[in-house]
Length: 150
Image 1 (cartoon, helix red, strand yellow):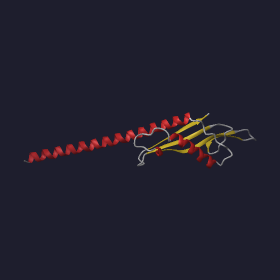
Image 2 (image 1 turned 120 degrees about the vertical axis):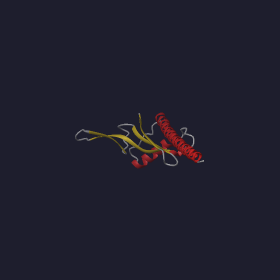
Image 3 (image 1 turned 180 degrees about the vertical axis):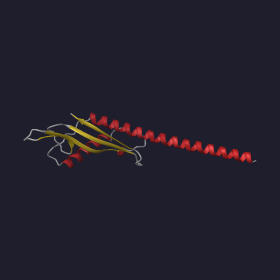
C-alpha cells in the first residue's frame, strides 16, 4: 500500500512539473508572437509613411503646433495599416517628430546641423518620426524611428 502511495505521489509531482513547464512555454510563445506582430506592424507603418506624400513643415508656424499637426496627419496614415488580430488601431501612434535643420552663422560661415523642433524647410526636408506600438495591457512596447524626406 505504501508503494502505491509513493508511486501516486511521484506521478503527481511529475505531472505537475510537466503542466507548469507547458504553461510557461505557451506563455513565452504568446509573448514572443506578440512582440513579432508589434514589430511587423511598425515596419508596415514605416512603409506607409515612406509611400505617402511628405507633410511639409512651415517655419512660420509655432513649433509645438507644427509638431502636433504633423503627428495628427501621420497617425491618420499609420492607423490605416492592417493591425494584428486582437490589437486596436489606436495601439500604434507617433510619439515624436523632429526636423533636420542647418544653422549657418553669418559671421563665421560655420554651420551646425542637428535634429530638433525647428522646422526649416528651406534647408532640408528630412523628418525623424518616432513610432510606438503598445499592447492593451502595457506588457509589450515596440518602438522604431524612421527618417523620411525628399
